Amino acid sequence: MTNQAGSPDPRRGPLGRATGGAYLLLVVELGFLLAVLPGLLGLMFVARDASNLPLVAVCLVPLAPAFSAALYATDRARREDDLVVWPRFWRGWRRNVREVLSLWLPVLAAGTVLGYNIAFGPAVGVPDVFVVGSWILLGALALWAVHAVVIASFFSFRLRDTARLALYYLAARPLVTLGAVSLLVIAAGIVFLTADWVLALCGSLFAVGVLLTHKPLIADVEERFTAR
Image (tube, rainbow, N blue to C red):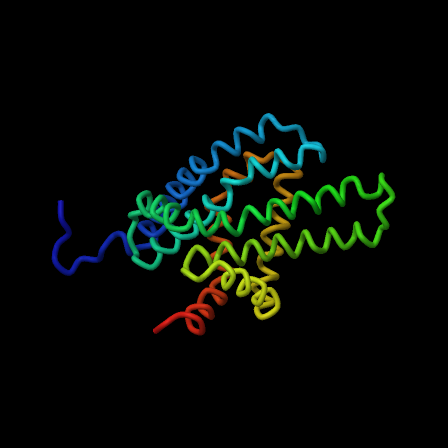
């Protein structure tokens, strides 16, 4: 059945937009869960102990490419104003996986070292100032990783340029960084109070949150560092 000429498109009404948004979140979430499934299954068998930090890092390897694909698919569906979500998710994954992993693997390695300093430093006599410094560096590293994944998801810069831009925007866009802090705190709270798989079920919601908080960053990068 087709609409009569001049009749409003039901997809543009409140109900159509609500169901379209729910569909977008559901499909992105399914793609995200499938992409992180190997790591999620691994985390189910890893005890929550600081000695297992290297194993946790290995399980987290699929996270950044999957989240990058979620960002890409959500943003493209919004820009194109359609619901062709599933193929866009995997196109974004293939498009960005190499660059995102090149940024993400050093983050996991550095985070593991900092985590060991925090967990075992006091027991082996490491001064408190170094433990506190490790906490600060770990937080900065997490924020830098969020910015870097966002930039790598939408722009094709050289790896070192993406890394520099992510570092630059930590200070250049304090409100964006503050938004990333809020999302990381929420994510940490979900993991601490519930379980890893609960956080995984919120992947598409966090993708929307990151897109909203990083909208000024994305616009600024596009305006200043890309060809018109």
